[in-house]
Length: 160
Image (cartoon, rainbow, N blue to C red; front, top):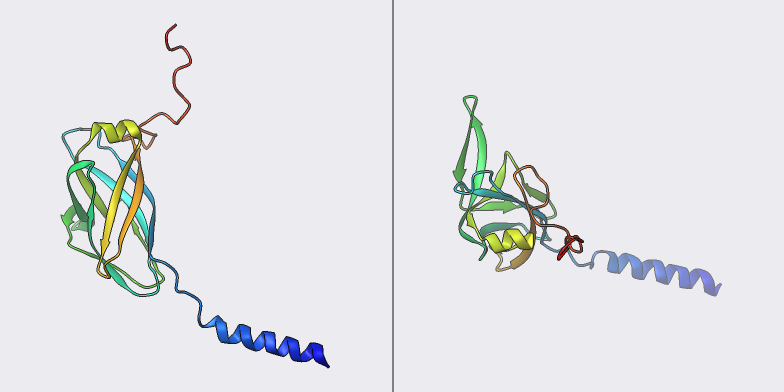
């Protein structure tokens, strides 16, 4: 008789706490910067933003590794591709928003050559709820290959 009561109590506790779980966190990942083949032209950064428990708006992005950056949106109009700066991106609760080629993305002017050598750039994403989220992006050459050699791949013939 005691076992069914314990099972019912455990089930009731589980049911009561099921609605109390924390909402998913707001986070940013999957970042990469594709360098432009023309060093005088801007490069582009792409990320995935994962919405948390409440809708928010991306209000800005910063990095110390470029002279200037802007959030942009690409679009097709009359068969022509165009791009324009945008001030914000809405992030619905629990949804994923991709900053990707052909859509919303971050434009970077004059990327720091040291960041290219390091192979990564750190960005700060600023949201309407006050969150500031730091996310790294891997630096890629215009063809999509890694801009910096992988760790441990230094020339074995150095000094020979």
